[in-house]
Image (tube, rainbow, N blue to C red; front, top):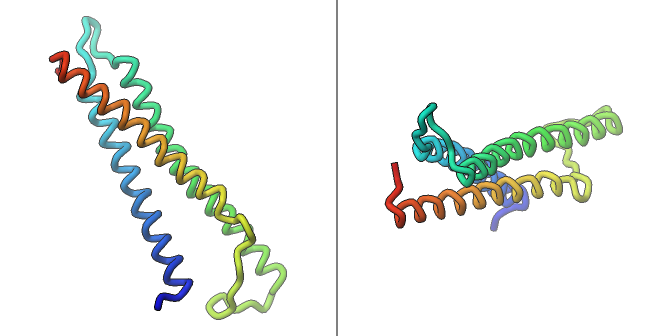
Length: 138
């Protein structure tokens, strides 16, 4: 039977892996957008849908960074508070609880970045399908 700590460790592993996958999907999407740029007389350009798609991927990357920054700051605040209230604490033995709702902002940011990536890929795939149907792929 798993312990509560092992369950939370597994949860952390899944969210960390999901974040890595989100980053990979963002960079892959941006690369596909670059491949789908249209040649023009004065260089190359992006269709409006592809620009919006790129914005979704960039927003997901920014939210990804924000999730880790917010999480690090909130954990630091909790750790400093524990150390201030318990100067003789043994960090390797003593156990403490996070305050209620501690993870809520990071969970919201996680869902937001996944949502941005999903929206980006819906736009990207629909644009690809439309181009295949029209026969206008580069």
